[in-house]
Image (cartoon, rainbow, N blue to C red):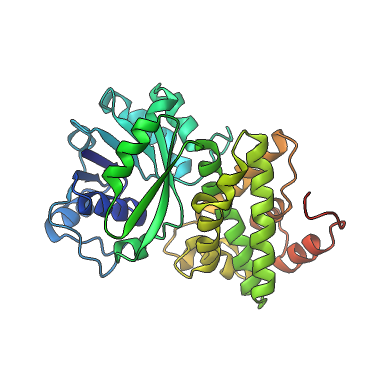
Length: 333
């Protein structure tokens, strides 16, 4: 399959490598010309995937038109809050029947739209052409060819199957799913829950606390997902529990690591400075996830608490106290 991956960060680069290793013809678009030249000429992306040798067959360019020419699959790996603006500039270059794939895990500020909804709106694409890939997909581990599984969700079963074949590599096992809403929502909300886990660990709390946050975080993700029409079983799968556990537990997780710094007492600005100016996706999305939940009347107490820490002046200790003092209820609620 002729594929274009737009976005040469850690996940975009790792996914491009997967596609090459699965036997596809792949071009990776990079925002910075010097990065494109380095990937293309040196077969490396040291800023985002240090120590990883990229396949010689992987091409990279700063020219979006060249990357998209003749592509049968276009995968987007752009920060969610700048995606709409970037996509608007690419719409005229997208091949007419290409499958459009979201690798992004966020909810848009201001609109509370999922990334597949942004693609449909901006590109004018039928939802059956749009897919999402989600799961326990820590980019560095995938680039190191450590075994992992993922979910390809698309309402068109034939497109999903074609993508599944195109993404199948010896270390990367994709499963198909028709529940785009559930897979996408699981990927977005888990970033916020991972921030909460990091905050708790930064405060010195252990596995019981983290396990409790993960489990109750999954519960609020499921409540919101069901309200939006998702299949509850999706949240027990790779795009739900699988992605949540990996993101909340791994030191490779930017969201967990960012939360850890907040729990240690650093400000949002200090944590951002310590991560080379990169803000974790959960920080950007916690407000929009909360906005989405409130618009549907769904309680999401962990998301609400994280948003208050990031933007409302709530201290981490007050966050934990707030969550622990909520009224007792049945676990099913």
